[in-house]
Length: 455
Image (tube, rainbow, N blue to C red; front, side, top):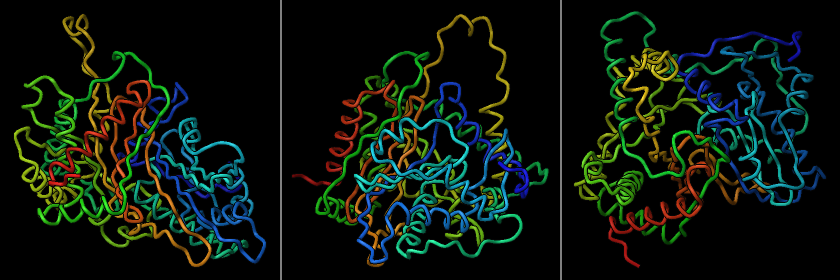
C-alpha cells in the first residue's frame, strides 16, 4: 500500500470486529473462516467492439471499486486503511484482485483460497464462470448479490475508460451500529437489555443440539465444501403453491423441515425434547435508516442473528407459523438502539479472557464443539441480482456460500430462475460427502411430507 496514496484510517467497530476476528481464527492453518463467495455462470454474447469478456470484466471490476470503495479497504490489525482512488491505485488494486484462469474450477478456488486482505474476482473462460470472494466483515450475502448485479451492468455497458474518479478520501459505508442508529451512550437500561440478549443468545446457541461429526474435539479443519440440491421449476412451483395453501412462507417451511431433519439424526430422546434451536441469519437492511437501507451500501455487512426454537412435538404447519411470528417480531426499536452494546458484549464473550477452570473441569473431557445446522435464506435472488443485462450478459446459474472451518454446517436457500436451491456448506474434516447428501435428501423429504406433496 503506497503511503503517498493513503487517504485515511478507521477502526473496526465492535460489530465488525466479531467478523474480523472470526475470519482470522484459523489463520495459523492458512484458512479463513466465514469468507463469502458467489459463483455465477454467465452467457456473454459476442460483442461487435472486439473486447473480450475477460477484458470487459476487469474494466467493470475497476468501475465497481469506484462505486463501492469499500472493496479497496485493507485491514491492519483492527484498523481499516483506505487510499485515494486515482488511476494508479486502481490499476494496482486490479492487478492484485482480478484473475483470469484458463485451468481450474470454482470449487477449487473457493476451497484453496487462504486468508486475504482484499476481495478477489476470478474469470474462468472455459466454464464462463465468474467467482467473487470477499471477507465477511466487508459484505454479506445480499451485498454480494447487489455488487455482482452492478458488475454485470458495467460489463454489459462495455465501457473501458475510467470516469468519475473523485478527489480526496473515498466515502465508505458506516458500520451497522451507526447505520442502525444504535446508542453509543452509557445507558443502564440499554446496557442491561443488551447484556441479557447476548447471554440468552450464547446460552441457546451453545446449548443447542448438533449433528454427529467425524473425529474428536481436537481434529483440525480441512477443505471447505458444499453440496446442493436444485429443484426444477415445476417442483419449486408445487412447493410454493403448497406453502400458499397453508398460509406459510417458503423460508418458514424450509426451517420447519430442517428441524425435522435434525430430529431424525438425534437418537437421544432427552435431546429431542429440548427442541431444535438454530442460529439464523437475518437481513438488517430493511430495518436501517435511510440511506443505509439502499443498494448504495451493498459493500457493508448489515446482518444479524436470531435463535428460533422449534418444539419437537410441533406439527409442521404449526412450527412454520410459529417461526413466521419470530421472523416478524425480532427487529424492534429497542433492539436497534442496543446493537452497539450487544456486539461489544458479544465480542467479550467470544474473544475475551476465559474463566479460570476448576480442577474438576481440567481433568474432565473437553466439551463437545457446536455442530448444529445454521440457516440463511436469500429469498428470490433476482430481487438483488437481475440476471439479464441488455443484449450482452445473462446469468444462467448462481451459487452463494461461505467457507466453513468449524463443525457447524450452514444451509442456504434461494430461488433463481424459478428454481429452489438448498445448498449446504461444511468442512470435509468433519462430514463426508455422503452425510451432506443425506442431510439434503432428508430435508427435501420432510419438506414434501410437511406440505403434503407426494410424487
